[in-house]
Image 1 (spheres, helix red, strand yellow):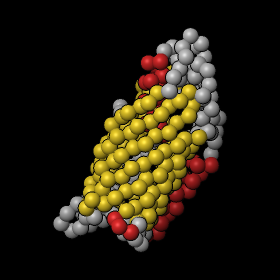
Image 2 (image 1 turned 180 degrees about the horizontal axis):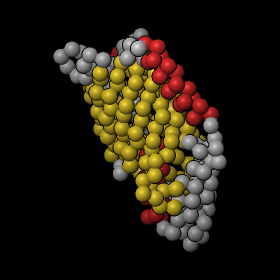
Image 3 (image 1 turned 135 degrees about the horizontal axis):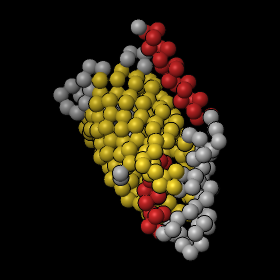
Image 4 (image 1 turned 30 degrees about the vertical axis):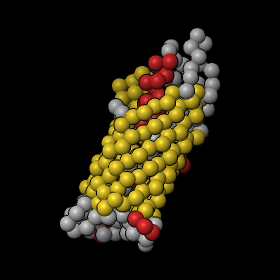
Length: 247
């Protein structure tokens, strides 16, 4: 059993790391902008915000000074557009490959770092989060946390993207299972860097404000942890599976 789990662990981590280094035909690059109105660009900005903004990938419980959580994930991110030419789609799913790390600090704080690569693209993003344990959790009570995060994207020729967010999370361990849920808000800036192909529309920066919800389940398999999670920012969702180590 342990041999099979170890093989699964190695396979999932290798797949995610392979995705981080793989760049095919870059069909998801955003090199140009083509919008008939500022309203169209606003809707596109909301879709882009889901692609690049910070996702909740950990339960709420405090890690402790010696605790840490490291892993890699494969994520399917919903978008309402084909990114390269901004053609509307019916919620296509794009692959995003990520590396994650969370480290416990003194005083009930945790700090997390995330690095994400959009598949079939030159685009990537990194995000950092600082979390505080309102309740550290235990055998009779859940863990409750509040966190703030910042995200910066790069490798996008046509846009500048960054976002801030705040999240409230709750989780409760049961044997080797830890379900978690959260609610928060995302504030993003989507700033056009190139001229719009439709020269009659002078695009302006969109400041996007969207509600975020998240839920998932962390499963401890002794030699590794597997997490299955979901995030929704505005009208768009992200489906994730993460494998790694949590101590």
